[in-house]
Length: 381
Ligand SMILES: CCCCCCCCCCCCCCCC(=O)SCCNC(=O)CCNC(=O)[C@H](O)C(C)(C)COP(=O)(O)O
Ligand SMILES: Nc1ncnc2c1ncn2[C@@H]1O[C@H](COP(=O)(O)O)[C@@H](OP(=O)(O)O)[C@H]1O
Image (cartoon, rainbow, N blue to C red; front, side, top):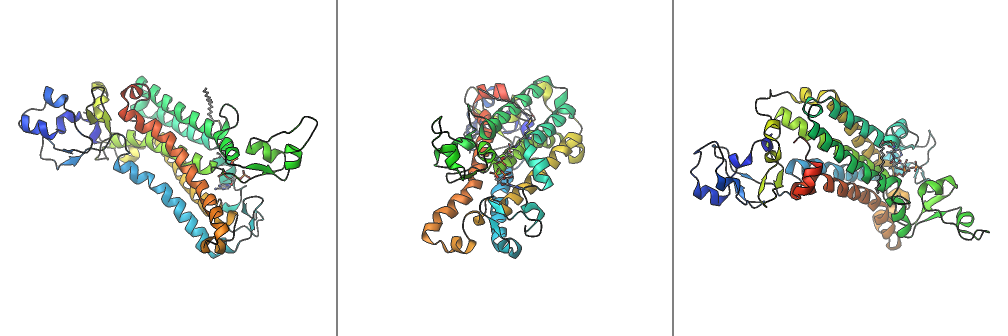
């Protein structure tokens, strides 16, 4: 991968090019080392490599963007599929359960059932699977397990992403962010409202979490309910893609792009420059992607694949336009219905955005905040 070489050897700012003779030496000149390079400046190789543009450090690289684009594409494809597939369109919808009727004979697919094995065993225990895949990878992969610093920083990144998962879905100094968001946006626990909000001896009691609402036999209605499934599946899968992807890409030397980082002096350089000399891969044998993945990488790839599949199932069978209104009314955009259609589809969008926010903090912020990079590091570096 390109970013493991000291970029000062291969990238020069236009001003450097005018000052230093091309290919004059393999060691960087002081001018080159301290050059401030704008994030979008065209870069030149000291060899005869084609010119390349630097990736802005505050944005994902083109390969990362291409991978991230898969998520909205899956959600859009699923939404269109649910509208166009005759089986899904004609299947009866149970508004109380926010799902198609769960009866075996009536559900449009096995995956439209909440009790399908993949949902019960995989998604509902999703963070445990992601965590297991991550630890198997870092504790078995030769480029991570023998390097205490890399291992410690990978553990910190897991901690950051896990705390975000806890805050959003489990606990945030009380109810989780999903539950708080739902209440703040006017949602409430219906059906049992009289019991839980009604006048009792102890006054008005409020149900503040979806779990408590379900436990009291009610259903969580109104407000904006961020999709926990979309959040967890995006956060978990892209976390694994980052942790495994950069390590494997470096080991198999497959990627021809670099992450850029802002150095403490403000210079923008390829991420490889922050790797210790001894950690650079010079001299390491080039492996095939399969060999570079190893057992842990293959397990992580399987978890990522399952996340993608379940995300598609969520997009097709849950939080669709069926959730509150009939598809025809939604498509015709009958005035009072339009708002509801938008609300339903944005549940997936907010799930995606909240996951992306956590990933941005963990993987992109450290590229342009050196102090943060010292603590959380960069995968594969
Ligand atoms: C002041 C700072 C305090 C910081 C507190 C941090 C606490 C850290 C605790 C660390 C716990 C680590 C646990 C890691 C191991 C596990 O993952 S065990 C948990 C397994 N459980 C799951 O994976 C549950 C996954 N499911 C969900 O998140 C939700 O069910 C859902 C899929 C998001 C959707 O929920 P619905 O009810 O279906 O809407
Ligand atoms: N791919 C999937 N397979 C099965 N059930 C799914 C699903 N995606 C979402 N659901 C169900 O849809 C409901 C809302 O999900 P979320 O808000 O997490 O996105 C949850 O129901 P329950 O809470 O009744 O289990 C969840 O289990």
